Image (cartoon, rainbow, N blue to C red; front, side):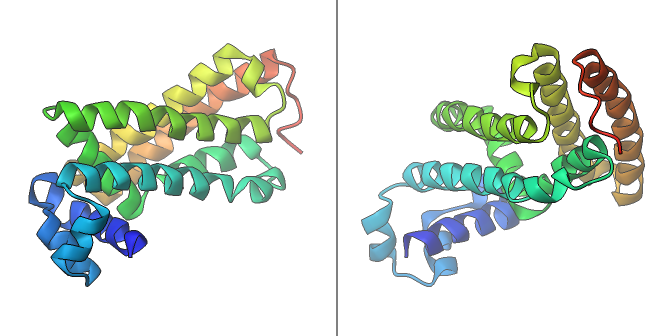
Length: 196
């Protein structure tokens, strides 16, 4: 039941936004009684906090599931950037972005996100370390990874305004620039094993 409530919370965040996500709506979406929902989560804040953590795990798991596939790629850097783009698509990221925007004016939610986001970022950075030995010990590579995440997230936050075709074009352009910098950093770090 707890899992159904968390999934229903994500659905509501995507469909109604943070302000429109109510405990009543979540209970209805999950197909549980209000009393059952209150048994697991007494307030909206409790529910959203648990959903934030649930989203963080889902986002990290989505990336880590792909490590073996990427290791076999002809161009690991290109494949890793595509994966970073892919794991930020769909309802998980939409719900996360909704929470980021709401946290701007909600100190309690902001505090929760400040605890969870470093966990997600650490998981994504450990993903980089799995693909590129020495990654974790090279601060410029870590900075590059954060910049890549910032680029992806920034593009997607603005996606509702710029349209799908232009969004894809902007991602291709940004990815080309990220690859140039990433390849140079990897070469400087002695990581010559990315290309076949």
